[in-house]
Length: 332
Ligand code: G3H
Ligand code: 13P
Ligand code: ZN
Image (tube, rainbow, N blue to C red; front, top):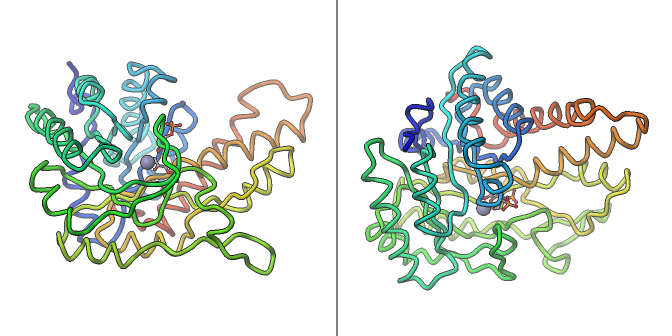
């Protein structure tokens, strides 16, 4: 049993409280390898932003839980070495069982998500409550994120073609019964790089897809139901067109890519939304830069020269998000 405090990590409790009252959101960046972790920490130290290092069940399988735990410890030491001790959370993304959440908590995670959004309401309540009871009874309190409403797209092994918006009338009952510390909601975001079908979008003069706006009316209703309660947005990559075009220029095929516009995420971050999940944009940035190097330097075979530029681009992307989208820069 390893407690997250031994690794130098923090839970989300104080971070969310400050973020809700301060009108910004904490970045939750997915990672599964060293270069992503380095880029996240470099960007968050440079912009003095708190950060949530987020691990999906798939990432945990890919990288091994002991390695990830030690990478999170390494992240804390790396930030210190870079000259600024930012708060770092190690969070399980889309946990689907009590066993998985328990395993993560016992190996040093400071926060877990239990995603019962695909279950019936009563089953979601029962599962989320069990995870909260376990997480909250630890010597060092572990925070829990629940989810109400379903996002379209792929969530690890679970995929859903259609989204179901969160029903504001269910929120108070869910929070009271489960005792979750934060709640992921569905207001029109979705996972992956193609968040909407082309027929759900309009097009600008250059033929670029423009997505339908987020349902801020639902977010406002939820905030009225449960004022100041920490809200989480999944599926919040913006899918920058420059990366999509770079990938396609160098041989990739990513048709119908469309994300959530940055101005809408900025607006959400000013509300009770205090955690914004971003994975796909990191994947796009890395792939774009790796494809570019491989295409432009066919004689290159040192992986450091291929992944290194991708890491630099990732750092720029994360720093930009902290500064201009989430508003978390300067809050650590
Ligand atoms: O919400 C899903 C995340 O983007 C994680 O994706 O399960 O492929 O690691 P993954
Ligand atoms: P994106 O696919 O939009 O990056 O969402 C990631 C996410 O929600 C991880 O939980
Ligand atoms: Zn998600």
